[in-house]
Length: 289
Length: 333
Image 1 (spheres, each protein chain N blue to C red):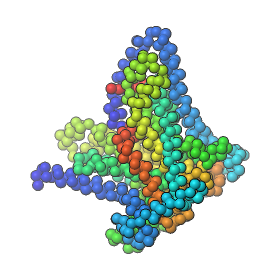
Image 2 (tube, helix red, strand yellow):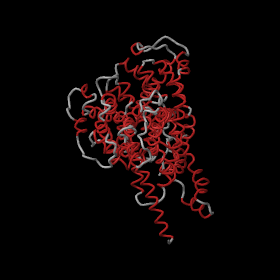
Image 3 (cartoon, helix red, strand yellow):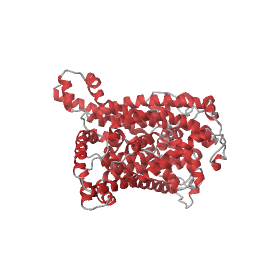
Image 4 (cartoon, rainbow over the protein chains, first blue to last red):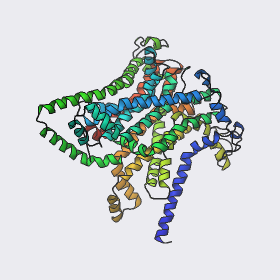
């Protein structure tokens, strides 16, 4: 074999290795997507079908059917209301994260302030705090101030996933904006707020989108706070709906998988839409803080 | 990260230049008032974040510490405080076999998760930094596990590990590795491996992505120099590449540690802490104490053990992030 042939063979060997790794990595997701189209009989037939065998939409009918106005009835039944609830939580968390994080990140990167080091350290430490620690306290505190079983309460709690991360990622991004840009705006008579709103925010669109996407996914995917702060009846996001399926309908795996697939959709859509931003935004924030 | 590292060098120069030019052009009174205005604006921009951090982090942590020293009851939900109880709650969790097992298990779970996540993640990162057909696609697909809601991952694996009908057993039987279905979730010894496997699966993308981007920062000249000097692949890896990317390896392991001691959704969805509490971690057992039996004080004490465990990393994390901390008004390019 010539040298070039050897190199080519080696390259295809790498492709093969990567393909094998991807089979393992993607298998769980693939298996539930296939499973969500199977009947319970097929699922428990003892054979794993790599492609849907006698495909059916029954599971999706169970999960999305009988839409009712009352969220109460959705527990263990239709998840349509839960999907809407999760969308609202995701959007609320994204909005909260942007309102809190964008100005803060700007101040922490472009102003000489005494608190900068303390605040950035606090944010790094805040990322470390386990959610269950916050959940126990927040449940009682929210009970006291009337935020249990409410959207604002849950969104405030979901913000703990997104906000420290958002500030650090945006701060890393803002460092790349040249100071001359802001100085020029000031010389032209723009106020500090005007400079921020008209110059900085528009130029930071990609970083802001990254942060909003991740905050949305944090709100959409939250389970701990939904489990603790929602405490029973009323609001029920899709994550809690899936968990309740396990308890109430432990045999209806088809429906569980259809609900799980629905819960994956936003991640999939956002991954495809925002892929370009995600990798850069993320690595900038998590390694360099 | 790549852009960050590249930006590092010019930044200090630019900052120095900025520091030098600012006072020079700022003799007038207008400049001073501009400085004051900027201080005020900076603080105003920070106000929502400071308020949020105090409300959503500082307050719950302080309250959690208070709760851990109180004789709580379900009525604590309404009363907010309870009688002082000294160290009773801590004594309880240190004597309670399930709590102690949960603490030890959390450490084991974290150790094995990190070990395998690092080995697999680093191997994939090395693989992806080679040139081969389809590597861009492979790299973008590898992060899929990271984007699922954690409870969904737990539920997916609960299905996959079902003794009857679970895809893992079906495949294992089909390819003839085992004859009878493995009782993954019903056997207390095997159940620990299910949460470990699921968590390794979950964390590999994070390690792969971060280590991959670190590998991209190793200068080509350095690699070529090592090849010219006659270093074999293993020597190049051990003596050249690993030392260069060591800071990133440290941060990745540190963040991996923090993520892993926090794991909750995955275990609740996969095993619920069972069978017979065989997969209870600190997080799940704390949830059980606080929200199933309403012993908030005991739950809070266990929470503080977890918090302490997680915060062990804080000084190291801050030290590793010192470059970013020290940086004030940076600008590059």
